[in-house]
Length: 183
Image (cartoon, rainbow, N blue to C red; front, top):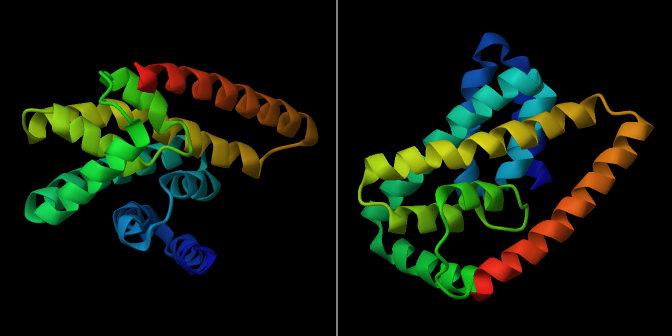
């Protein structure tokens, strides 16, 4: 994965005013290269800072959500594969709302497209799906991009506080997700 990310980030850094456009496009091709979303958002924090990186990541995530929806409409076999993956990840079919899906998006081990697939199945049409994606992508873009910016400017005390917070969040989300999935 590093062999894909490093040259692309160097290219984006050297692209000048076209860098944000290339970064947004990188969000779209990330799906094909199987690069985790959170890594791209963190790179956005490194390259563009917290505010602009979040904006560019959000635009890229929305484009990724739209292209995902369109891909599933054109390739039915992909739809059935994701249905099987969703069964493995979510076990039963929990009744998750868009806010819960937003929180699940912040958990690094939950697959981005499984949650998109869940939202797509619960949506009546593409407009409703894109509204849900809008809500689901905001926290992810802000948190992980800010995390990348924070890592870029981090000192030792900040690292200890951040690591402690992440451990606590992972413990709480694991307990919460176990309760939601087993119902």
